Image (cartoon, rainbow, N blue to C red):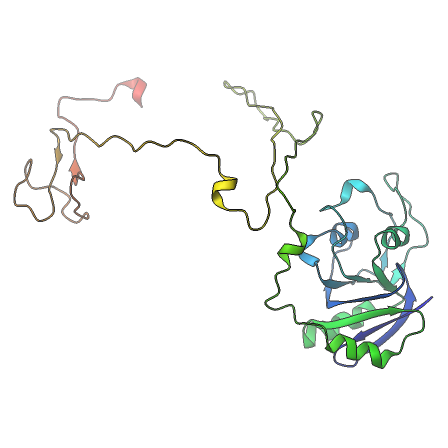
Length: 267
């Protein structure tokens, strides 16, 4: 099936549909990664954007559920140069085309993505629309110009979790701390527990509630010089470090008693 990409500056590129049918609108950007297209598709930072991959062939190693970066696909659309006709990898669970179609992501292939990248690099990111089937390019250009600007848009609300939840890694998680040398104090090998929070969560919801008590007031020693602001009375002689800020009840200079000495154990 034919597909068309139209930019707000009037640029029209024709290609083939490589995903779901329909239209996709968003800000057209590019990514120069040689691999990791599934991580790009599921990256929340690409929400509301149509991503162009500059690498010539995309989809050659398929997709796997272990490589997702979030709960689902985040991009508004996908643009590639050449779609791999097969997925060749022992971890592959399906093809890129089926993955895009299943998640209702409109994509276009057979587009000169590097020429498009030069346009985006020179003129800046632009709004665009991908349409599949029989579409009028001029209508797509008008739709691209009518897309709201992303500046000032709150895209975080669309990708954040609805409510906080607990995430505990499996017991056989391979990402554990393994010291290179034996330590005198064994490290805790218990997997960490994570709790993703919403974007509007306050500090009181994230930080653990602990009953805090104020620290006890410091007891001035005989070897510390104390001076109160606005008072001519001093508890001892003039402080040695007169350049330090003066505050009520704060030691300005301290020295160890002449008779004291550090023991080897305290070094």
